[in-house]
Length: 121
Image (cartoon, rainbow, N blue to C red; front, side, top):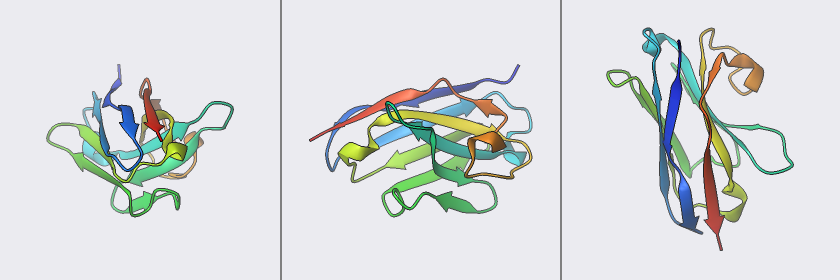
């Protein structure tokens, strides 16, 4: 049974930093594309970043967020710097076996439980 277990997140002030981790119980983890999405109250889930052979970012986080992975630990990370109030959302990690539609939630096969990030001004 595949599980994605997230940690990190929390409350941070504007301009601060947070780091998310997502540990995946996928035997062939290195062959999966990994992504991060977020969902704010009353809004649709939106793409944040994805990584497999290439790295992809939403324009809203480019230059501030960094996605990375450690295949030896079956873990993907999201480093979030220069946080803004509009970054407040529940953040989800996701795994894509086929590595297509990486900017679309429909392209992912497995999802983490989500962790709350709140940025206060």
